[in-house]
Length: 217
Image (cartoon, rainbow, N blue to C red):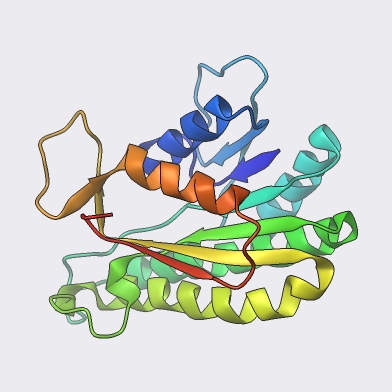
């Protein structure tokens, strides 16, 4: 089974479709659960910024499936476009709580339950804005910091959990777009990024913790 956060729309929705097509059992979570659910899929309402909600979701998932092989931390806030002088305290808190703290909560809870499996993969969705040396991110400082935190957390978490036969990996995409919308310059499609993440989920290579996705990938 695969647990995907922020799964109701956007990139998360593409991930659900891609994993389902590969015959994974789907455990989707979102703040607002879709009204229409595919047969066989399991959903749970989840605000990743609230620890108690994360506890409930992890417990519910293991009760439903017995084991969860992959946790995809996809849920994210987005404060891009606001300079540090313009951004509100509420937006700063939301970005850090949803994009960084929530995935940390879920990772802790998942490892507690899944380490006895002898296998488990945690995949984070970061952003090119979180990479050192990327330019034109001046109005994305909080977003970039949260996404950079995911990259460093993944690297250190991977070292921590390998003794349990588990792995952490982070996908670092550039701008992503829905193929049904107007093209965005230097962007990759949700479908292409979802395909790459699925390949990461299935990979047995534990020596690589980060995959950077640029338009030519």
